[in-house]
Image (cartoon, rainbow, N blue to C red):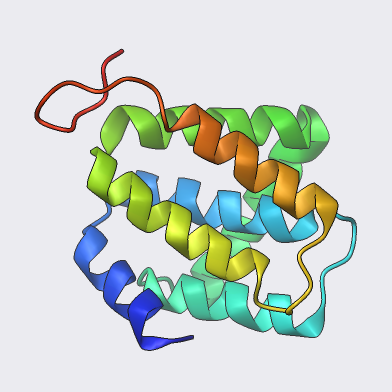
Length: 138
């Protein structure tokens, strides 16, 4: 993980619920093309550690996210996490999360079309109008 990503993780000051949603989005992103490379798996683990998660936490979050996708769909899980983060984070922290997700998507040096589309959808969702303080208007 590069220093910029490490710094972003430290300055975001995320709650446990926000950590879950960021990790869930990262997991959905790398799974969106149906292939998880060894490098992507390593990056996901490092992102988890950077978010303050233990190996057990990471395993548990992966299981929770998998179950949520099986019970609904990848799109529903992504939409829920995107909306939850948008409600609870300001523009600056959403941009930090977006940068982390972009790092995850490019970690294996091959961004698939599915990953590219998912990143675009997340960016589109987070570019809604904001008030002068930079907070979301909902």
